[in-house]
Length: 217
Image (cartoon, rainbow, N blue to C red; front, side, top):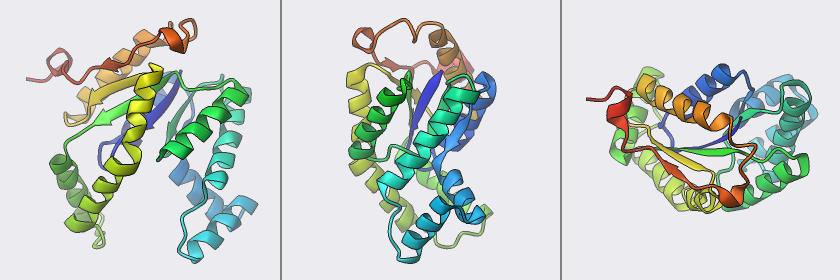
């Protein structure tokens, strides 16, 4: 199973990604964690990342995609070829470039998992997390700005994955265990089919209205 995670800040992407990875025994490739690891280890890539951070710049796409390519090759050679990718793509340029990497390695994603949530609920969650972690820079204004950026830059990717027939949308506003159960049930059902159904024959799946079937009142 090869899964891309697409979700706004606060939707539980990291939590659900880790649960999917554990369930299917596949690597959870979280690009933010990987970048921090490379910086801490002072690897060649980490030093390049640190230079950009020191200048107040975003890490260039080519660095992130090179890192992801390396992780995908490792997953293919040592972990059975599955993965959960968390952190990219964040824009259409990255999405298209990532798709080309997948084609080159014969490791394109089977599922683009979209976690949907309301901005007010996401803001509430992120403010609660900021208070818990004593992150005074995560104000409501900053959070609202991050969510607006997501809608402008990242969310258009959802339509693109929908047109490819690999989009699965779930309601991420419910309790974590209910969301996880729904995701794992859907992915288990799909796991035996995805390698035999070409993208041209697939259709997007919207599970956001099935809360009652997974324990919601």
